[in-house]
Length: 72
Ligand SMILES: [Zn+2]
Image 1 (spheres, protein in one colour):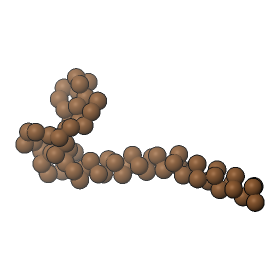
Image 2: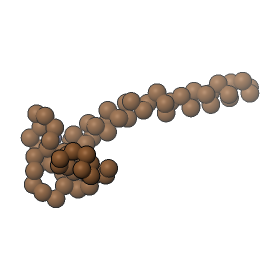
Image 3: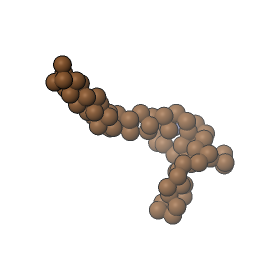
Image 4: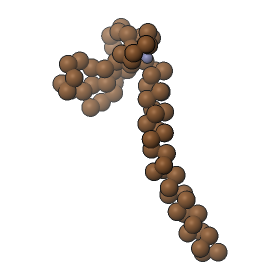
């Protein structure tokens, strides 16, 4: 799967969004056609993904802090 720039003038596939798609998400045959979405929706997805990954990424600094405290 890969994200590439959308070369066709199509509307964003996100429900309720009427922007022109800027990127297309190639599913290589998994879906009947590529998903197209605009920059705004890409950012929204990215933020949603980033939120999901926050607990994992902040756990390491916490461990590091504990380790530093123990060493003091
Ligand atoms: Zn959109």
